[in-house]
Amino acid sequence: MLRTVALAAVLLALNPFGARAQTTGAEQPGAKPDGQRSTDFGSPEAEMLHRAEIRREEETHKEMVERADEAAQLGDELLSSYRKNNSLTREDQKRLERLEKLARKIRGGAGGSDDEEELSDPPEKIDGAVTRLAKVAGDLKESVSKTSRLVISGNVIRRSNEMIELIRRIRTIKQP
Image 1 (cartoon, rainbow, N blue to C red):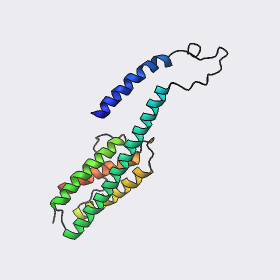
Image 2 (cartoon, one colour):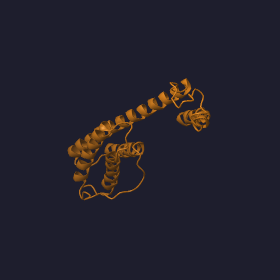
Image 3 (cartoon, one colour):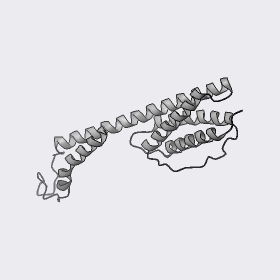
Image 4 (cartoon, rainbow, N blue to C red):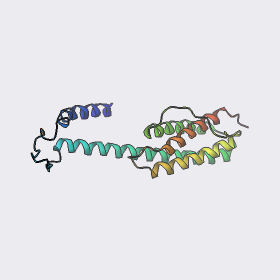
């Protein structure tokens, strides 16, 4: 809610600048008649808005990196718990839910959508699925940490989608 209000305030603040940007170079204040550009770099308000936008993007990217770190940790915990108990416990089911939420948020933050993709060579047994899930979560963490806030990564989106499909698959496989 707070972000929506902040975004609306930014858009309203930018509105007067949009009209000014549509004037020709000769009509702009500070333009020199011989075609040379002015050294005016913009208003302080525009600079503040630009810096605020950069800070917001950096915070969003930092949150995505933190989500990927948590996803990798949950994947490892899920794998070690499964190996210890040879089945998924109630706590593991909660981890799966959290992993799915994290994967969806990461995918959305990376510019992905809710398209459902089929897994290539889906695992038939739960131990293979849990092992693959832990590996994909680790790969996702690595991909997110290498990605800049300025880049939309297809690899991050693919890994997120694969995690979501693996979690669905794990839920449908009968446990021993």
